[in-house]
Image 1 (tube, helix red, strand yellow):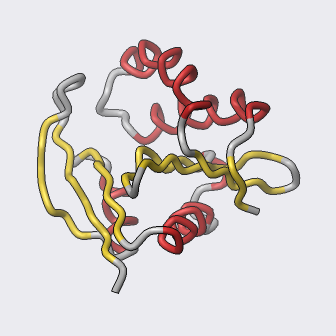
Image 2 (cartoon, rainbow, N blue to C red):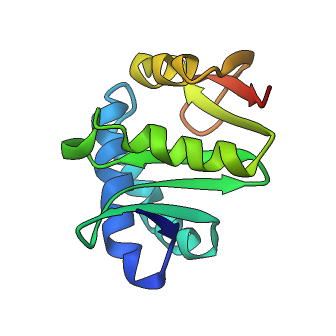
Length: 141
């Protein structure tokens, strides 16, 4: 089930954010995620988040701001089960255009978004960690 974020979700959501970032971004020092943990945790309740819940457990979430996907995270044990696709499709049903940034070295995420009809439309460098990112976009047909 997909639903809006509730304050009670914060601990599960920040845990998924932290663990998924560390496992998906081995090319970024763990310290980067530790240093950003508290800022992200305090910003999450003010974000537009949708939660994927199964058996009253948060399994994943997507953060979106005016069509920009700030993050799509699925708990490691629930990856490759269609949860990310369901969250993305939920947003596709609400917007005519979606965009996001993904690290160039995160091949798994790039492949996922390409499979979901996103196209690379730009390239930049993340100022905080100096990693190259792709700007990707999906437009409803």
